[in-house]
Image (tube, rainbow, N blue to C red; front, top):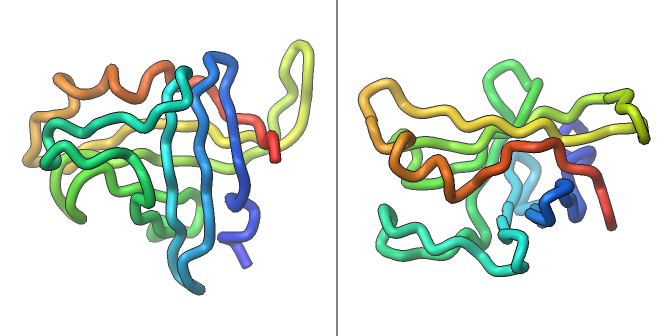
Length: 124
């Protein structure tokens, strides 16, 4: 199943960490920790921490979309699972991106909470 390849613990060079677990056959639970190994407090979302956020495959089945707010509101983290050949390493990585819903303008203010958007390598 497509979701299996995302499950595990992933870390980028800056020390940001993603812990991804299966919720059911169609969705995942994603927790995001900053380089200090602390979840981010989402001021824009009643100060909820970035723990057990809902994620699903996108429409095309090519990436997962992690809801950083309520579904259909605000912005979300997109994680593409792909093979990369880097200068000092090669293998499968999660390539992150942030996307916003067309009517929302909050991404500019809160983008920095999830930086840097470096690729994540599986560590567990």
